Length: 260
Image (cartoon, rainbow, N blue to C red; front, side):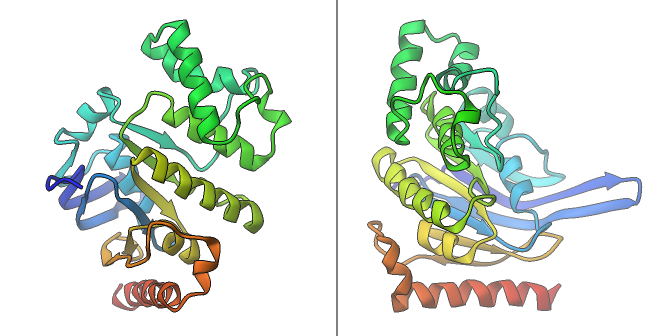
């Protein structure tokens, strides 16, 4: 870990102007994320979790406050390709093979064909999809498609991975498996991860830090530094430490509703 935060938000506010009047999406958000942390954002629908992630990615512009990514503005970080972004849906092009989908950003960035092939093979192996590069998305399960989406975000080797509820549409068994795989991937790559979820168990299982947000306007009601070890088998969810953290998250969510 370094002393300088990889992502830093200070006094961040975002208000959308709509035909029905202003919508206050984020209010006074203060948040530092250190290199190598796995930070989950959890809160009710519409609380600004995804909006904050999109601000980090330079896809939304805050109304006021400051936000830096790798010491740059989010827009500069986006142009510098400082992060990979995984959306809620896999978003794979059906007419491209899995390998073709993963190498798309590399094509756009002008990597040589040899470098593209090497990187595609490497990231598909990272997400346990080696040998599937010639398959088409419709030939893969939903969980495998999401893993391919993660591989695409990893292909250009950015230090930051932003993930907007990537497993929300999957059944619990597949979700558990992908949570395990994501932790293993994080351990191997040591990337900084920002992760949006609605699931308390998922947030507690994955994270080194859990950020609890209130209903709109999105405010941070609690920041929980997890005492759990980085090596986490699924059955850690039965431990007292895990249950205690989950209880604190639930209390933070409840407090956000009461204070709103």
